[in-house]
Length: 275
Length: 289
Picture 1 (tube, each protein chain N blue to C red):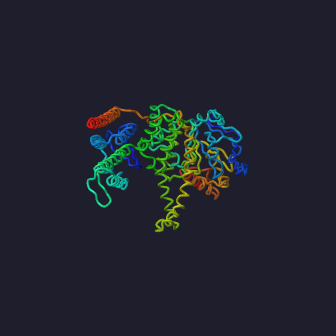
Picture 2 (picture 1 turned 45 degrees about the vertical axis):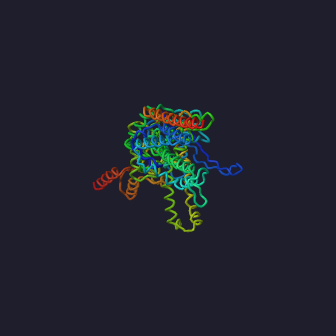
Picture 3 (picture 1 turned 120 degrees about the vertical axis):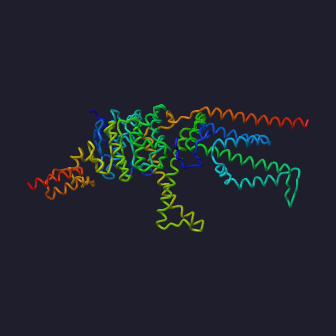
């Protein structure tokens, strides 16, 4: 089905990963994240890398899109790596000025680098292959048990999806107001930061007023269409697991078991060596 | 024919209160209005801004309940709170701003929204959505984002969303006010077709007189009161009274009236351009005879 959603970072193409149920993808991402923190030996990271590569290839999304997320955390990544490299205590390899580079530090730095990279790339696959509305549906379904502690899950999901629907509308509106204020001599390019922030007030005030007016209209329209909260609503597009999802779950399980087995084996080995 | 929508002595007051909860002033938006609309009709409610026509419209699907008087929709009293959802299913409403009434992120999802609220089964929702989109000629846009549609297309999607709920009547509150002429024509054509082919009762609230030439009945409101009622021919024959109420008349009607006043013996009122042309032709012939 054609869905031209310009929002978020969804990459529109057809692939087995795109076809997966959003719940599968969300749970898969969680399993992957947990595995990166729980298992940190060389061999488990090799498996994690292999798994990541397989999913990337299957998703048909160009790798540069995946690496886009890396830009955002570049500074964070550098600081973390340098911190671990220079400030870990242990057996020194070489030292200069006040810094000691140790074997443990080097290992830790490399581990951190790969952990963060895998995390960012792994989670971006989720958002690259799932439309925002699908993601909302998936979250709603996964959070369903929270209804027992009286969290209005369906309503929260409705709010999220309405927010997504209105982002482009409000963006357009902001643009319009900005042009209108410019036409009346507003100055948005002032070098003085304080003045520039102040110049945004005449944009925000009308934007808020119009947003409230829209909200009021929308509420009327929804009520007129018999909306009465999440209870008793049926789904036009209910989530359904397909064969692919079971394959994905099986692979996830296999991945988890392999990583666990390797970790146990390595720990057993060290234990035996010590004994 | 039975009366689908009926109001009896309906009065609605907006009460404004100050910070202490004391009544500051009362505005009577609808004042003692009794109208009845028959099943399958296409009617129009006209009046200038603040005449109470939108407030009256909100009574017809229980968004508001009257301060005094009674409104029945398909025999159900709208002040009966337990039947509110039945009424909203029977009487759908389309609002003025096309952007503010679309809930879904994809056209087909929005059309299905009302059905989801009614608790209809998935397979049937899809059948209804497909039928509804086809009936307003928007089927090919089912997968696109509402943000990419023109105003007229968005309004037709909103209408489809109502049709999918299978209502007996659709109330349209100035659906064309924010559209360009092309969008207006699309919307008016769509609702006219629904009325003729699917026999859906249409209640059209509007400013634009050209849109209502073809309706079965017109209600004219002023300051909350119902001041005129009749077929387009009856209502538009009183050009002076309408002008006094701050309303215009269709162009052809106005020209016809002016020609008549300046001595051309044509029969009033004239509603369409074609009628005007043939009337002028006839009048000239009779003059020369």
